[in-house]
Amino acid sequence: MVEFAIVVPLLILLLCGTIDFGLIFGGYQTMESQVATAARAISVNQYQYSGSATCSQGGSLTPTAEAVCNVVATLGKLTGLDMSTLKVGICFVPPGATPSCSGADATGTSVVDDVKVCAQAVMQSTTGLTSVFVSGSTVSTSSRLLVEEPQPSGATGYDSYNSTSTAVDYNGAAVPGMNCS
Image (tube, rainbow, N blue to C red):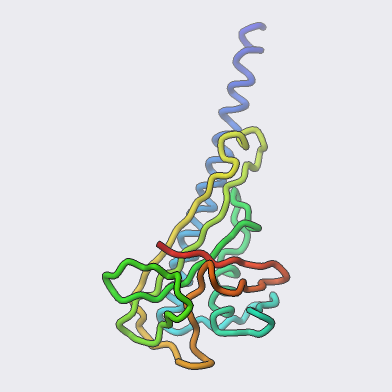
């Protein structure tokens, strides 16, 4: 009986760790897949937001806000990740160049540009027993594709979305930008 009392807590911790790892890994895989889907949609100029949630940037529906809301909408609810900490970045960069994505003037108006979409969220323990190990850790992913269809310029074009951009409001929650690297 004493051996059982010693082993059971370890087995429960191992079981909870396996459950949390599976949920976090599944959330990461979903995030990775949906970021690639969003990058593809932007690269072929199919970024128009058609979801039912409200979407705006600085009080109006800008093309940049539409692209960000599409990323957030395709991500949905990620298991094992805290969606309130989600950050999204969209960057246009010449092929082969390192994306800095810190300027607000980069637009994807050229078919020789690459578009890079990135996302980051904080891991969260579902069982609660492994929160000591995952608390505050982040997962991030990005996808970089060649822009196949040039984006419209001017008021109908959209800009990079990064940490200096005005936050996009998605269904009443601010989605902060991040610098893709």
